Image (cartoon, rainbow, N blue to C red):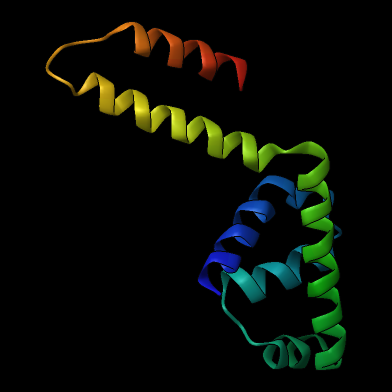
Length: 110
């Protein structure tokens, strides 16, 4: 569950500007503020089912945006490259050809 929550939070960060105000509010309250569906429903005077449906539809939309735009997967790849570069740069042997190859790969994924 934590892995799904983390993924949805990242997708929300990348694609929140593509959502409606209501979608943004419900997602923020549910995922970031950790409110229950019932608490959100009570606060906005709607049914728990309405909040649930909105959150699930929005999750599907975020996944659809990711499938089309790949912003999160590109971010993950860049972070992997950065981690590998940091590891290589901390090596006592100094920068190598591998560092140059990784830097080139990083630039291609920007």
